[in-house]
Image (tube, rainbow, N blue to C red; front, side, top):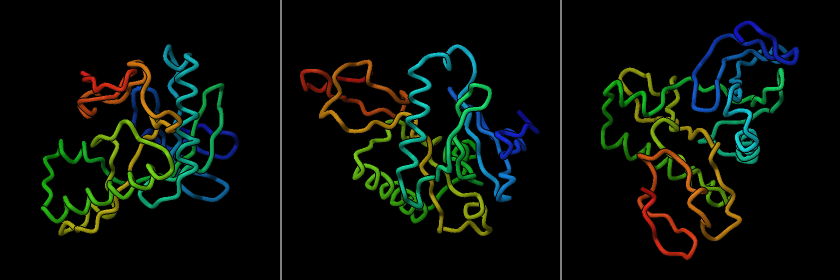
Length: 202
């Protein structure tokens, strides 16, 4: 993908990262000169499943409807060589997961500010009838230009990422165990299933 021109508009510069079902590249929008992120659904066995394509498209739709400084922007969607992709805001920063691996320590004041910003984002999306369902350190980013200040600044800009598992609250409760998705280590220990009783998601 490096060096390719997507739809005669987005020139792929380099690879930013890789997830379970997607690849993310840095690209230049040659019409505007703006740097963006292109998120492609991975080719292979899983990408052939209809539910994976629908989930990928649902992520784009969910984010595009949201307007909040704590949520990355979606500029558009498309398909390149039969592979769906999303054009997103390019975020120069590090995830909390990466910062934890680097053993970055936060003061009480910094921690409170980060948690407050995350809470504000969740309050906003919950008000829109959406739950994230995969909130974890890897999906919380501190913008690089703020987090890298020396000495460290407490004015962090937090961005919540990856709404690929977001669920529109059309039902009052989860009806089957197959609907329980997310990252195991960060799931709630109890989930309402079927008859309304609390059951362990372990």
